[in-house]
Image (cartoon, rainbow, N blue to C red):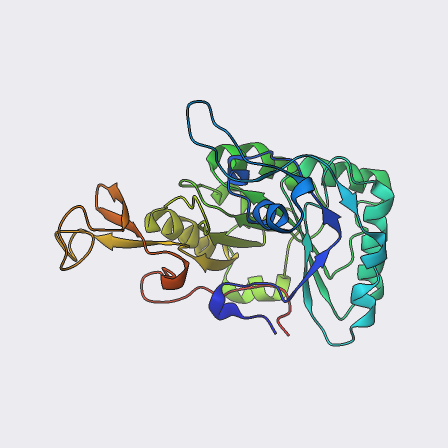
Length: 304
């Protein structure tokens, strides 16, 4: 069962693709590359080495391995589940025939839901054209696009909207404010939205979250509020995964980022904003999922 309390919006991984190639600022601290480097060194470069800076974090080296032997995994499970496909199923070197086999498995498992995230919307569109039928995604197949900032949103979402069927957007890691209002459904009364369901010519749901792990970058809650409000006005589902490792403290709460402590605040890493501070509290002290006193857990797909 999906553990929404921890910011999970899927139930089980479906690991069909090993490896990837960095293609976004959001790839700089890729959790999947870090895990791959830890357990299977040969599939990643040792680390990113920015000019004049210390060695960074493991990155994928562009070697791609597909696993046809794992295609049958969902077929063996009768209980409904939400599968998240790992890694980028739309990587340029993954064969269209392999993608078609994924779709056929989804067609044979109507009890399951499949979330197919990518940073490469053009490849997904090319695949749809290759299939020859732009309406051939089954109802339980959700194409998703990952972006991390406004530039990526402006460049990639218009391409992604040409992909047929229902779609979701993942803004993760969020690295700055993002305006997506022009890509969301036209404003509809809630009752009409419930009846009409996903429209197919827009983003139907938005997942948003900040970074965790080594090198996690801070973000401002106002960035989240903006996307939340855009989704609410447009009738799109909104799911907030959480603030990652950085807790935000507004200036009206305290004169210093760490209540009761004075600079330099000991071991804490602090980022200063005009209206407060982000304090890196770390994984063990998860900054949480509350935004203005509540969580945001709206998901359009089935939650077992």
